[in-house]
Amino acid sequence: MQIDTLILGAGAAGMMCAIQTGERTLVIDHAKAAGEKIRISGGGRCNFTNLDIQPENYLGQNPHFHKSALSRYTQWDFIELVGQHGIAWHEKTLGQLFCDNSAKDIIAMLLDEMAKAGASLWLQTSLEDLSHADGMFTAVLESGGKRKTVQARNLVVATGGKSIPKMGATGLAYDIARQFGQTVTETRPALVPFTFPEGRFKALAGVAQPCRMYAQGPSFDEALLFTHRGLSGPAALQCSSYWTEGQPIHINLLPTAAFAEHLKTVRTQIGKRNLTTELANFMPQRLVDFLKGEMDLSGNLGDLSDARIDALEQAFTGWELFPGGTEGYRTAEVTLGGVSTDGLSSKTMAAKDLPNLYFIGEAVDVTGWLGGYNFQWAWSSGWAAGQDIRAKA
Ligand SMILES: Cc1cc2nc3c(=O)[nH]c(=O)nc-3n(C[C@H](O)[C@H](O)[C@H](O)COP(=O)(O)OP(=O)(O)OC[C@H]3O[C@@H](n4cnc5c(N)ncnc54)[C@H](O)[C@@H]3O)c2cc1C
Image (tube, protein in one colour):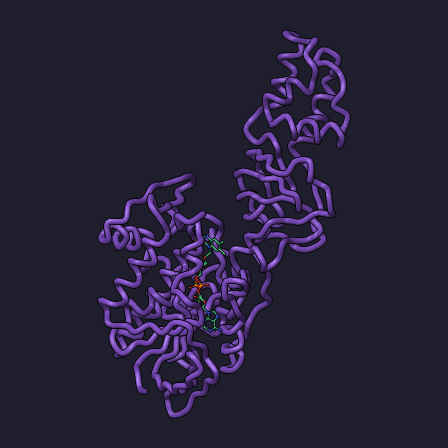
């Protein structure tokens, strides 16, 4: 079978690319359904983009690589597509856009656009062998016990990263990259909860607190969630992308309160109030009880010296913790690192020394923050590759 374009992976990036390349495009995926990660994303409502997409919202060895694709296919382009399909959406927080109804609406939209463009989709199909000669890729595919050989001028690798192997994530993109002489940067789980030695935060499991948090990168003002195993919630997930093993994370539990100033004022008005009672106005009681075991919170407000108040504020705003690790690829939303951008064109996503080979989406060493940034990268990079293939045809 001869086609123009073979796309490996029917996820967000692969489907967006197929919509551009259209006829004589075959998308294969070993999963039973297309867009499985879209389906489970955003708690089933898919945080499909963000109103405020900036280059700074992405990590990768080259901080400029993602700029071109993101500026040519923007969040507004995707919002327009969503609008054309009558999919209602809302902004939840911090510019994050979610479907009103279901993430399945986004999958249906992409499948509909793919069908309209004339692209074919083979599910439950895996790649057995891949080679390249005389300007053509030859792929041996396996489906339902049968083998088929497909020849394609263009090969687009859109098989994502290693996160959530249970959902079909594999390292195929990295293997193909190496096979064709591309470099793969070190990969590790990102947007992933931190773990701590057994029992450290067990008493706090389920407690959430708005905080300002940072690891070895920018700080995030978002919610922190304590779990049986450690720390999760948007603040912890964001920081995990910047965390390196053995290094601390820093938590400000009172990012919006002028706590010391407040205590010094109320000390003269209600001096007989317990410090812990007052603290419960700023955080959940269970967190106050936990902190009582970590530091001295005894006494009434009237007994507190200025120095002790300042020390308390320092303790609450500069809590330093050393995570034991993270939950790993089992629960990570994304994979940090991947196919090195050094060998790829930022305009087309094609390999510089083999311009009919493309890498898009999470497989590439471009990782977004939590908040719709990763899907926007999948749409933009898929679009950029698809446009280049269309232009060449
Ligand atoms: C729980 C969860 C929630 C998330 N929520 C959000 C969110 O709300 N907003 C956001 O922006 N991002 C979110 N993400 C991240 C987002 O899902 C990914 O960044 C995005 O899906 C990457 O798109 P992709 O097309 O590159 O890869 P994927 O979506 O992972 O698609 C890759 C496809 O390739 C297929 N594949 C893999 N290996 C093979 C193989 N060997 N043979 C054949 N097929 C193969 C897979 O089955 C899959 O269909 C979330 C991730 C997770 C895990």
